[in-house]
Length: 229
Ligand SMILES: NC(=O)c1ccc[n+]([C@@H]2O[C@H](COP(=O)([O-])OP(=O)(O)OC[C@H]3O[C@@H](n4cnc5c(N)ncnc54)[C@H](OP(=O)(O)O)[C@@H]3O)[C@@H](O)[C@H]2O)c1
Image (tube, rainbow, N blue to C red; front, side):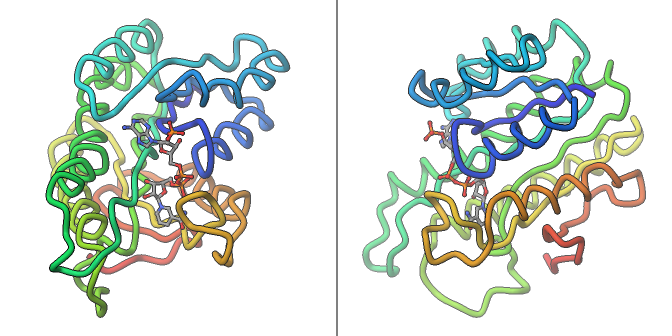
């Protein structure tokens, strides 16, 4: 199967690439900077053309267009929209609206743009699956705390975008889900996070492997439990 992963330079995205390659899949990895590509290059040397590395900044429409032009030459089976930023975690009076707009551009608009640009290749794929790495912090129903406005609001917007996308694409046989990876030991999650990235990604891959039309438009955590919107 051929997978496309965004934000593949480190953290959860890099772990997706490693686990997929290990089990024999083919991966097109989007990375924002050449620095990010350096982490993937040793893997590419090991697996040859099963890993292709592409420049991709999901905040930049031109970058998404050029990424799609590269990737859409062959059918894509599964797209995993993973790239994301935390934005500034601060109280209401300290909110920086430029930072918040950037968090929206990357966390909410980016995945929608990437999915839209890759649709022609996804339509030619065998399974028509799109998974979005969002966060429980984007759940309105689950929110009992203040702060982290940029992150919470941008992930809530992503969640609504995915639900809408699922409604649009259901008729074409697409399965589109929102995933919460848990609190994971990455640069974003920090060293105090309880969950190693391999466990989180193993769980999310199990969900992606098993997902079918009955799961479209739903929100699951990495263990398969449904998350309230
Ligand atoms: N870690 C957690 O506890 C946790 C919890 C809930 C949800 N999540 C979600 O899981 C996803 C992955 O997070 P992570 O923990 O792996 O974070 P991370 O270690 O900070 O990695 C973030 C990844 O996103 C990429 N990225 C950031 N801005 C981008 C842009 N404009 N265009 C393309 N790529 C961009 C980064 O690339 P660079 O290397 O170039 O910066 C990096 O590859 C995110 O969507 C995050 O919100 C994480």
